Image 1 (tube, rainbow, N blue to C red):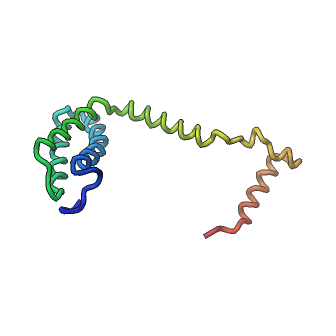
Image 2: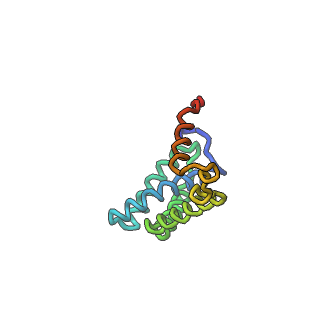
Image 3: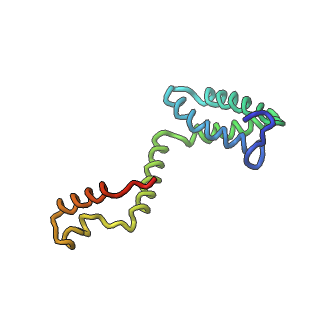
Length: 138
């Protein structure tokens, strides 16, 4: 963000918090895998937050920046683990797929080839032929 550019969200605090939180999610996994400790993580986030704060038209006080950094670092370090992240992603994905396929009936159950009085193989062959003949919409 260029100096003087309008800050997003409700203000500088929210902007810094949101930006720092996104950075922390990436960095915590990398640092934990590298064997770093909490202090390394905290110092890295603090350096990044101070750099980000300098881009604001009116920077925050050091206390505000440190408070935001400490809050983000503490929660992320304690709560964000690769296993938990992977389990959450899996859970969210399965929920999304369940919604997507809720009203779906598979071809193996509906067997449209039987309704047309042709073999399964012939039905798929004709569908593929139809798809080739369809004009491509631009």
